Image (cartoon, rainbow, N blue to C red; front, side):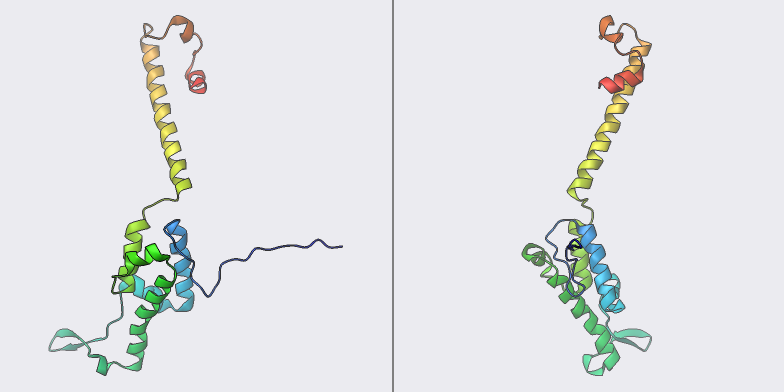
Length: 174
């Protein structure tokens, strides 16, 4: 008899992942993939802001009145609304209120990035802090060992100094 395999479900290809303030970098990457899979113009509205039809008149660039927009211009401008909807649908209540006053999808995205983009996940942060601490400890030990070598009359007793004949032993004992 063949054993039954079980598979967990992955994320939906139709719904954005819910962001509740943690692991921003992962959420950002998944959201970019999702938005680009729907329409390249959606991600473009985040990078460049909303599409606003314009024309030149007497050497000046002027925003076109809505009544003069072509169908293609309407579709392009609508992408920002679609993008805002996708972003808002992917946020928990707290994160939604963070961006609720924003007028464009780019502004929403930039607000979230400013709030969370530089934050490492807690695990990564604690690992990098631990590495930093180990480097500092090694530097301190190295300085202590060098000072001990230079000055035999240090405060460490001679019985203790025989236990630390070289830096490796000192590091291991630490």
